[in-house]
Image (cartoon, rainbow, N blue to C red; front, side):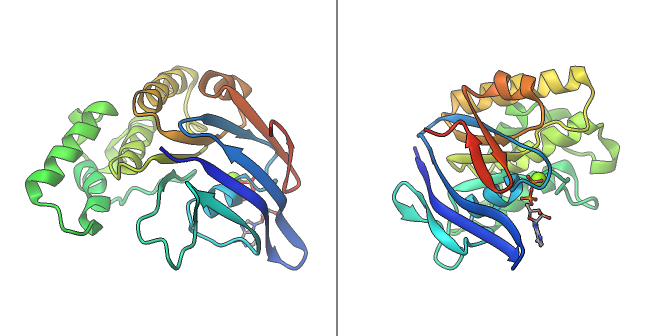
Length: 220
Ligand code: ADP
Ligand code: MG
């Protein structure tokens, strides 16, 4: 299981937009941390860099000693649950969950894909929704389906950019305990961005606060 080391990482989008300034942070194997801070402080940027979707301008991110690099990283270690929905509207929930598996090499058989989709659907409580299209789902059902598309890749790191922002209180609580059970049972190293202190405390032992592209507290 992986340990993430973020070492002196800076990232700017334009000369005057410093999304991250000299961020250093170590996340232990199988640890769950919550990342909090005002809008624009660099939370999403940090997740995107750990996922290898972008490269830092300076500094280095390593996972289990290996550098995260979009050019060389053929099989990323992290899957990311994006803030906005990533479900394809014209595909059923089943096909949305199966999609990330179709790029795996050597190719999986149809039966292997079905096995993995069904197992992950059970875990995320979407089995009864597999034939539906995303526009036939409630917000909570949609988020669970998105979680399934992230988890089906079986990667040891999960990056969550807001778990349950748009949901009502009841659906939020349900989603929280679902995700908590999954990451605990599977010992997934998890970073969860949230605005909600209750959610942060419910899911993580350590809360990291960011401000203006820097870590303000929670580091050690
Ligand atoms: P947060 O997720 O904490 O709200 P972000 O990481 O999205 O913050 O953004 C940090 C800063 O970088 C903000 O000032 C934002 O406007 C800027 N930024 C993020 N992505 C881009 C981009 N692709 N192009 C230009 N500026 C960006
Ligand atoms: Mg963000």
